[in-house]
Image (tube, rainbow, N blue to C red; front, side, top):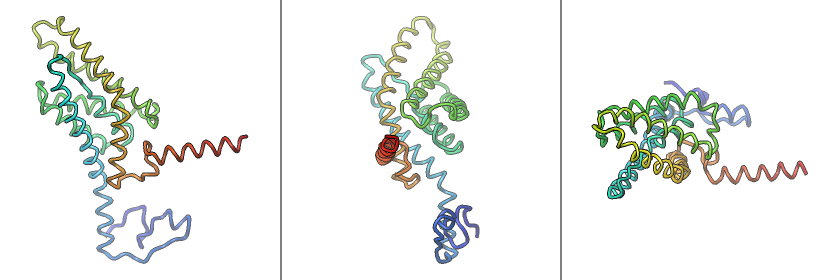
Length: 234
């Protein structure tokens, strides 16, 4: 029976033993098995929780696009499906969530099946490799990255499909209107959606609420720390 590396043979977290000298009674084999199973399933649970938030976003955008049919406006929010998982999650977890999001977007898209999956996965890999160079812990920075990613996805997606139209030049004015409306919509909804994804992970016991980057406790704690630092400086 294997024990996760973060625990010793008694089931005590190494951080507690080193910092406070705390140790627990040896765990039974069944308890160790459950602990090991929970550790192994955590990436899958994390990907599932994030996918559920992406599924909710897909439903909301689909309903909104249906309501905007009379205005001949289509909102494209592909970048919003990718950025949070690409900037904050491990590679495998984020890729799984992006791949599933691409599948549900392909399910209702008139394009060839797999187009959205390919675009989402490629964009995810690019953003993941560049995330240490962008302010990924800042909401404004995340929104800016989302807008840039959505712009790139929209242009690539449009170029791959516009060649199928009998009159490509006549479509561009409508595409520009769709792009402008999509970018405005993302700028408005992205902070809320990032907070939703962060709190979903907290509710699923996959992240500590005190360490959640968008949690209220984190903001309060940061404000208190700044006040203390200001007081010391004064």
